[in-house]
Image (cartoon, rainbow, N blue to C red; front, side, top):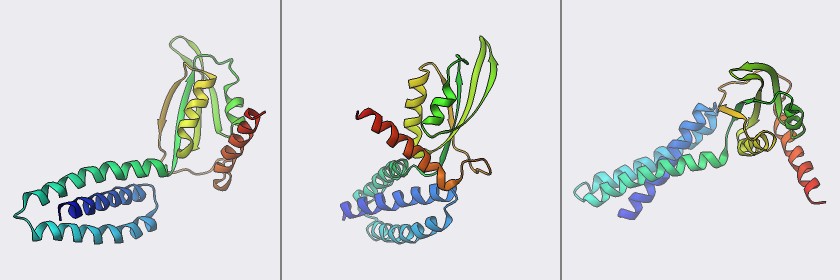
Length: 184
């Protein structure tokens, strides 16, 4: 019984975490679909605990399952990497051909010259699907290891040249092209 309550709550809270994240990302219908399973599992788990409230181990299993479910749900969302990330980059060397190198890798880059405390800078704003976030950081550090990077998730994206159906393909194709160069 303890193990069942533990597993049921892990599954319930993982689904709950995913549902909340899906809702925040604007994926209402998928979130609604997940909520049907979430509430069913929640009701079963809570019923098992309430029917056996005199056994403290059931309550402990429920609580531990809840905590582990939060971690597991956020790990699942991390792997799914839903949405996009906007990365602001400031390079202390405006002479680096930074934007061209990033564009060749498939990223959409807007850049401008800026002036910082110690002189001229190159400022950039880059939009990419979250699944490519870590690769983008590697690419940036490969071009300028001292680059200053700030990242955030935009809530809504409108306009621009980067049409949705093209966004992922540009980066995938650039990655394939880059991988092909490495094999020679």
